[in-house]
Amino acid sequence: EVAGADQAVQSGTFLWSTQPTSWLDAAIGIDDGTVAELTVAHDGYRRLNPGVTHFRRFRLDRADNILTVIDWIEGGAPVPVRLAFHLHPSLALQQEGGSASIAADGVTLASLRLPPGLTWQNHRGEASPPLGWYSPEFGEKVPSVALVGSGMLAPGERLETRVAAGDAGTGRDRHAVMIGEVIRGTKAARSAC
Image (cartoon, rainbow, N blue to C red; front, side, top):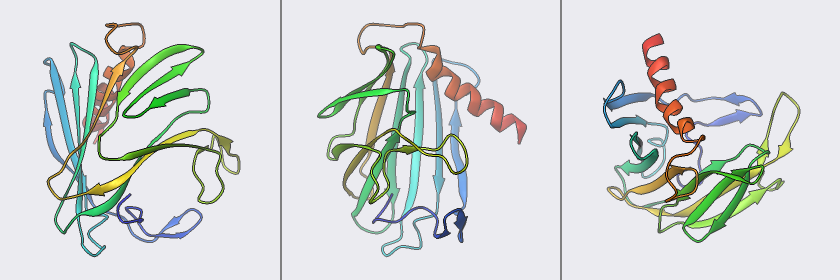
């Protein structure tokens, strides 16, 4: 979210009146190699004053099972931003300062190093504004955790989030393959186009 606005203009509960143009900026090592990078962008915030383009890079270190997500903007001037991570209701979040862990049934699935410079808050089942909800089907909503970081972002600055499979520093575990599936899923979607 940039300057309190979504990337598209909402005209109703399930109606968006604009459709941002998105594009693949770069794809490196998707098929093989120790590192895969995918950089994408969209123009949904160019309608704002100042207008900005949002870029996001996904970098997967296959050897260490670490996914790094880097967000940045180009254009304009510094703008207020919010970066949100939405969790499934079955997942638990422990967050302290710039670190967080995600667990299911007491097993740590991932450890996160959150971008410095943002103020982080957990939200669950809040009504105004609606934050921390999961909708398994139309007309149904279930409380879930949304971890939201808020702050200012200037053109050229980077927000870097690192996601490590399992407990950070404990090496690989049976959940490590989940991060690799993100990149393989992207490869499959790309080849279907």
